Image 1 (cartoon, rainbow, N blue to C red):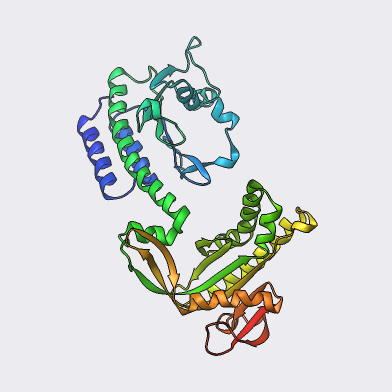
Image 2: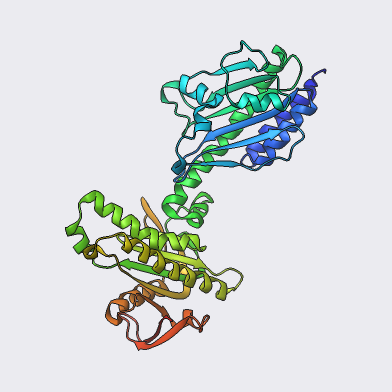
Amino acid sequence: MTIDRTAIDGLKAYIIERALLSPVTPEVFRASCERLLEAGLPVLRINMSWGTLHPTIGALSLRWWKGRKFDDITRYMHQDGESEEWLRSPGYYAVHNQIPEFHVFINDETAHPVFPVFDEFKEAGGTHYFLRLIRFSEPSQFAFDLDGMILSFLSDAPNGFSNEEMDILRDVGDYIALALKIALRERITLNTLSAYLGENAAHQVLSGSIKLGDGNNINAVIWYSDLRNSTVLGDQLSGPDLLATLNSYFACTAGAVSDHGGEVLRFVGDAVLAIFPIHNEDVKEACAKATAAAKDSLARLDYVNAQRAPDQQLSFGLGLHIGEVMFGNIGIPERLDFSVTGPAANEVARIENMTKEIGETVLASQSFASHQPDQWRAIGPRPLRGVGCPVNLFTLK
């Protein structure tokens, strides 16, 4: 089949256009694969895999098969380690041996190297496998899980890819790699900022909210939790054990917030400041999420304490409140922090502090509890430090 060079040029222009306008998406990859096929390239399967800098995700991949339903991104998690499938794959072979590219006629009994996945390729009608390892940095600095991509092509032509076709795939592959590198840098920046600032704040910073005082007023449920007896734990535990204990506590509190749709804003020592934004005036939904997170945090705490020694049990206090807060940059021009400020933010910390005096783990203001009266029991009015009038407090039923 004659190769349509005009279509190939159009594909390269399309990739550049999409890369400049927005991050490369699975749809851009799918469209690029289809356009290669339409241009006359005998492609049966195309796979693109790359590493990323993310707290939980180690690598991702996109896979296209001619005539099959296109799947979304596949994620490979850090916690899963290196699977047997990966260790016996062409990609691992290329990365481990630092081989920039290789190709194999998979029906050739004398072909080398051979991989288990070739059996699947043969059954699907594959004849010729071509892989490229594309680096995003100098070889001496290269590590797949951080800075590079693997791009592979499978042909179903009887004689496989011609030299001309492989040259075209190299050329188009470089365009795809450049587009991915741009998208990857943007995504890594967002992932890193999200890990340290929270997703909402990360988007605001990348959108230009980087000056002292930049921000906006939002209505939100505010969560403030604080670990009890942290000084005693610090005296009992070594540095590594104390860090592990703090992370167990944060898994109970901050983990519950994240899993129920909230956003953790800051870790203030061993305290957690978080919000559940109120979208479209749906106060009840935000309160329901926060209440579910509070109950989940208590269940998680019970599980953690069941694994700990009797004299090293964890406990915390939690305050919940509703109010308008300023969500933006505070600090000095040279060193900013993205956080919430305002009377409601101060009041929720005072509410949490009352858990020690009242002896309840979770306390909520009336403005919060009134949206779920079946979930909360009245404690009565209590004076809060710095607040003019006593505040009606509630605890979970």
